[in-house]
Picture 1 (tube, rainbow, N blue to C red):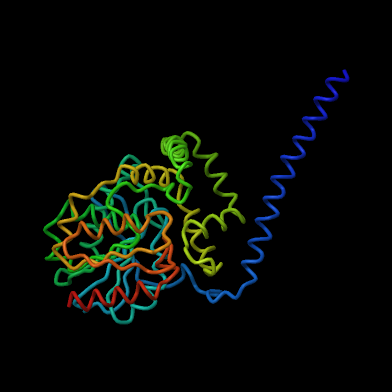
Picture 2: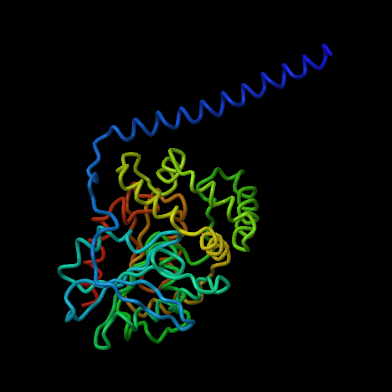
Length: 349
């Protein structure tokens, strides 16, 4: 009996230590986030997700209805079409949309399963399918006599590569220029932000979890975990997606909400696609038009070395590295991206 009491006492102490540790972590998170939110925030009141455009429904070859929007003068000789990244939606082009809509014809769209676009057959969730979807968006939103500059962030850049692989004849005829932001042609590894020794284990565990979620097993549990959100979600989004420690908390909150709104089966399926993605053979097709490749010097998801390799493999591509910026550079340093879009339009014209 005495031995049992000793064991239960030890177990109780251990449980208390663990609980105290967890409680300490939670308390530390709250303190850290509280301090961050006390800083001046220039984006407070920014109408993320509320900037209007004229809605356009785009029907794909397999019958999926995609949500797109257009803005700007209809008679412009050139259109700029924005392709968002993994787990995001068309609203992440907020700053570029505001800055360019008065002077240029603009198009943005939600990739299938993201934002306001329908999912369709989950078995068709692939980078190649996104390339075919992009062709449908161009056909539905860009006039026949209009040329288009394609701007893609992260998986949106891979979507453009997939289109170049499938329809190379568009590049130099319909497509007049390309901008690839925070993206890579192959070997995209979502564990890049972790210390090197931890990556193989995290990669293996991530693949198992995502395969289960993609097939429906464990999806509900994963969604509950994601739905918890809170301070940990804020801090992890801030660390992984942004390079500047002084990034606006409002911008971080917006990005975290967009990511969390993406259904887990979509997250899982495209996560696995990113691991298999390889479009190096299509890069020569992009070189038929002016190409700008942009990377953030502190991108923790697609390291600058990968973006540099991408630019080197595209004939004539121009590489731009933005100091201090992370993966979500379009929100973190939007003026730099907008200016590069304007420069690319000048070059194309």
